Image (cartoon, rainbow, N blue to C red):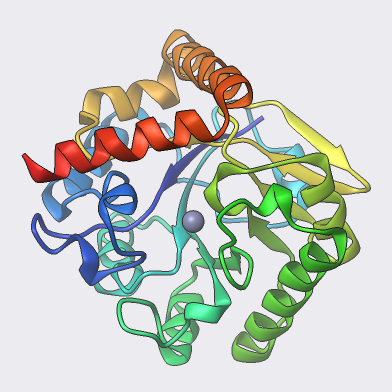
Length: 265
Ligand SMILES: [Zn+2]
């Protein structure tokens, strides 16, 4: 049961929009290069093996207890300009999940940058085509299209079948996984903080622990080594899930207002 960390972009302060999705909501998950370097150094001091970069369900299922993975969502340019280099200096490789409608647009990786990432040994997977605001609300037909088309685009760019994906926005549901399985995705990462693996229609579903700007290197490292810390993130995630279910749009509005206030200060 590998432990999987979920990162996004790595951008300097005041230049958050230079990689990946723009805006204060996305910026919360973007670490500075210095922060990211501190996280990697702290992780290196704690782990006994390199992060796993094998992408078949069997390799993940049979991974040793202390196996761990580094994943990066969205496909922003910092994957190639910052993250890959920092990982490679330690002999590590990451998993990069790309929303294919944004490939080649400003602040997102181009075709050749994705090919380069792959050639340098990183795993590339789908993060849907359009990064729907709430993918769990898409119709089964839309869902199938998001997974099938993004797979086809990436397979064409990289010249190999794409069999891994991550769910955008953390809006996972069994329906989302079923569509991914039908589209040929064999391993689907969501944002549920758990090490428990599950399967939906033969597609392996893997949870992840989210890392955000301002999280200390000690806290990030504890996610790997300290089950209690992982339990805490899991408990807070479940509490938020219930709040979202009960309050729905009111919760979203309140969160946006809070974020606006933080970004104005
Ligand atoms: Zn995303």
